[in-house]
Image 1: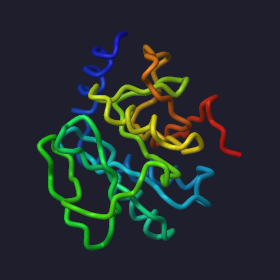
Image 2: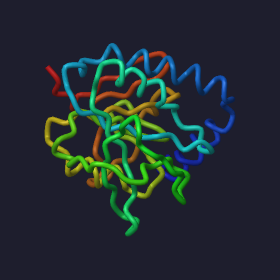
Image 3: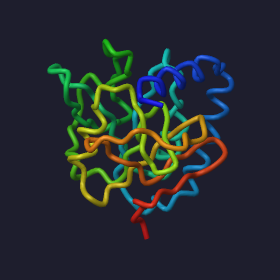
Image 4: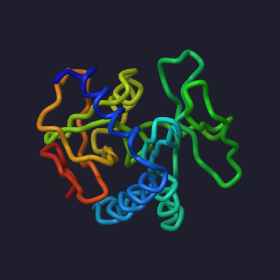
Length: 192
């Protein structure tokens, strides 16, 4: 199945999820993240969900990060439209929904990708090798390529993996993917 068909399949699957199911599954995903070997690290990049795309509600994971006194960084698409900047999420951060439907900080302290230890990556689907399918704009693939070599990439998904997803040389694989029922660990995982 090509990426376009996979996107359509998972957009359709998401559309059948109720708000209550989304939040219950998101809580289970956040709780499963507690089992990951990442909690000695400091700087965590997390996406804020697009409401109408029924993405994993990362609010629950943000509560955990706050409770563990971690530094939280969120993305903001630059006006040019091809790249993202990464801003510190603080108690007084003002968020505004972008033209893409993404809650983003209006302003804030920029954090360099080289300072980020963990990235929670949005996705539509993933496979058993850690490959993922996003929305097709490439924002996260471009961002992940400029992170440190030891940065941990974690997908969050409501669904189990596809057997295989077509892989392109610009695609960056995940180290883990967390679902409501299981944590998937991939061969490219180098966390000790």
